[in-house]
Length: 491
Image (cartoon, rainbow, N blue to C red; front, side):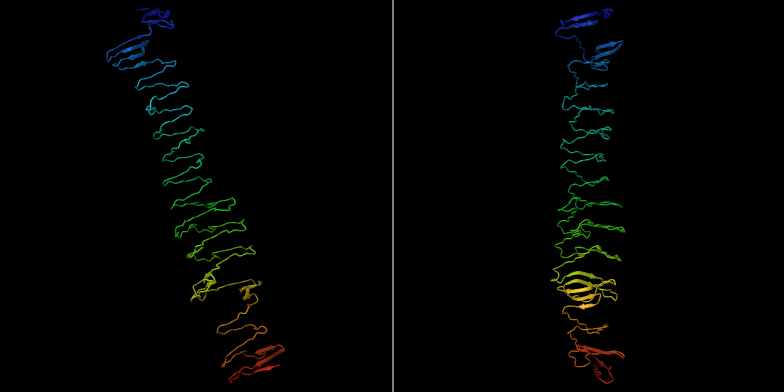
């Protein structure tokens, strides 16, 4: 059957009809026209098992552009085409259960979706090394997501996007490598930042605020400001008006604290020349700068200064300076219960004395040692123009014994008794009015009063002045005869 001119004249070479069609046929030429009604097959081919040919093969210029092969061919059971496949309308496109390969670029039309139809469906791009881009809209990862080995999750440069896990009640774990947080990091209210293991935690060089209570675990140490050469190593600042509580509290607990290192230890191993610990309160006019309270202390020391084996030559291990003070008390030691319990208020020792100290109350106890150069127990020195009392001992506020810049005065009704050794009066000696000087009371032998003048050539050895006038008694020096020479008085 041949009709080579039909193509240019919209003709039909062969027409087969099994029914009546509907609609309007196009007017283009047709080599074969098939008209079907409502039943049957337009084209039917059946081959034996293992058929190696093509059920349909369409060529253009000798080249196959569409073919349907049988099961026995080189490419069995395949629909092959080099043409474009265009599907329009609202019909669906369904493949078989075998592998479907999309070998060219694939575009999903606007407002259309790619949806997995089953619960075990997978979406696998693992064989590709190319880039995978999602849409600019929300991307939901509804299942577990695993980042392959040696791969990264990065945000594009200049991005202002967020990674937000705030709706989750699950956990967020980082890798075991170095994790860098380049921006500000905030922990939301009532949440905790916890670190386990032997890792370290390092902050930056800026100001770090600890706004809550901070607890150091048992056996752990806080080390601050190593190798600081200037500035402040640790600074505790309270700019408010604190009326209760404490700026710094160190609590060793109720256990038996026995370490010699101390509850608070400040140590310097270098030969420093500054001040190791200083309390500064230059604006306060009242209150206590350093308070020590130990209401149950029975032994031990409230303050212990130990220089060890140091050969100290300074001006004062404990130094109190208040050169502008005009009143008040610089050093106050009070122990009002010591008086009835044979206690000691202040004990100063410059050596080890001998003998046994009396068991009595001592406000001030001084031990001077047992060498020829033990020094002075109480040393007082004043300028040449100074006036006043160098020593004033009182009872019931009445002076008993006074050493002033002019002399020594024994007050009240005190008596003065010397030892049995020789007593030398190098200056003029007088007794007050109405006072008697008695000597030699009860002596029956030897001499009651001896006045030795040496080689007296003028003056008198003894002069007695009475109320009505002066008289003198001249006592001759003793002769070789026994007994004293008689006294001679003149008026």
